Image (cartoon, rainbow, N blue to C red; front, side, top):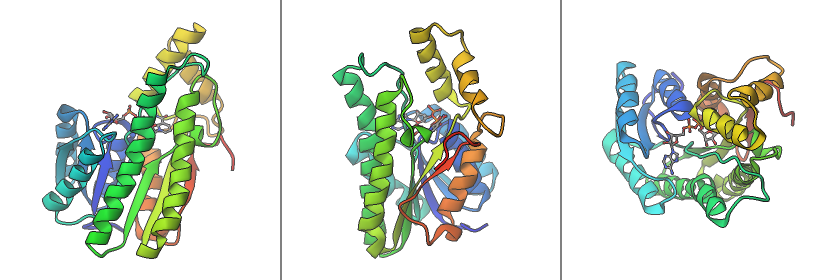
Length: 259
Ligand code: NAD
């Protein structure tokens, strides 16, 4: 109950890791502002949050659009009567050899994974300062933000960028009592990995499921990661136990990338 009564906004909350974070933080006692591009699934997650006894609000927004991210933060504050933690979780994957990736594809993935995080940092910092309060900003990086992996080069570049933004924002916002950190999952069994696995199959000819299995074979703890594994770290980053941490991009991957 460390974050009892706090208001947390989660982007990409309709499924996967975002949904897992929303439910975990609701269990921790927070009210959750759910933001995603997909309305239908957001309603389901809101129902799950409410079943846990917490308030949930819903806002449909594309994080690549700065005005929509600012509007999402305003909506969360108004609906839930506060604003304490911003989780920039929404992101997209892309499987393509660097030699083949097009300008449109590079632009698309950077608009969501990098620009979306910048708008999230801006909107949250603006709100914390307007409310004259401390706050926490937490963003999704990845093992792919620590190591470059073949065939997901542009994705890796966006996740390395999230680490850079996290460090810079931590230094800029520390004077306001705002901390900025990131979580770096490994291989989480979400819809995103279904898409990555399919993308690898198209290029390498690997049968369906084989790329996922190959990546999982490299996990020291011997199983794929779950959204709950990631959410446990985010719970720490969102709570008071991490008050003295800022600028970090913390790996939680079952033992894949060691830093
Ligand atoms: P997912 O594809 O299962 O879910 C992503 C959610 O984000 C979806 O609900 C989608 O609608 C939403 N979304 C996508 N683009 C959006 C946009 N422009 N605006 C608003 N919402 C948008 O993905 P996931 O596996 O849950 O991943 C969540 C985050 O964690 C991503 O940033 C991803 O890069 C990162 N991550 C995932 C893994 C993994 O193995 N799955 C590993 C490391 C990092």
